[in-house]
Amino acid sequence: MKQWIFALLLGLVAMAPAQARDDHKTYPLSDFFAREDVQNRLGNDVKFYFGDQSHPAIASRLGEYQSNKKTNAFNKTDQEACEWALLSAMLSLRDRAVSLGADAVVNITSNYRNTPFSSQSEYMCGAGNIIAGVTMKGEAVKFD
Image 1 (cartoon, rainbow, N blue to C red):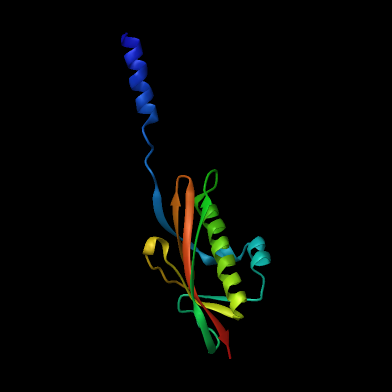
Image 2 (cartoon, helix red, strand yellow):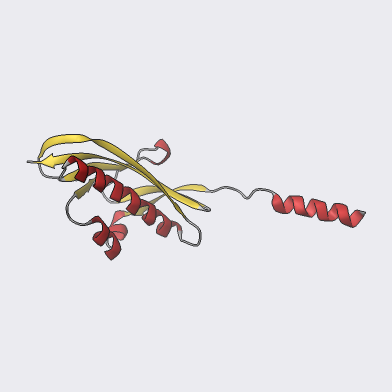
């Protein structure tokens, strides 16, 4: 009888939920844009300007857009998972800009879990045990 109770208690302890992790991390955009697969997938039709990065004069503003993307982080480093989620978000921003006839997306900021983060050189990502995610916000524009 004691062995049965011990086995039951051991099983309950093993089934206890693991501590969930949701670290808000920043990573360099230079690492992301240096990847050949990123350059190939994003193409050159739409330019991207992060934070308060300078850009050509704007002829028309076509609207702000936000993209929230998640990815499986299993068996990836936090940075690998975050870059994968960022690629999905950037493709979404690009596709929205193309559909509006925009030349660029400007004022791109991270907004993960409604925590604004603006930088010309970094983005914010939420990295967890099994999921990583980014939220990127930017404005589609047409230049002069």
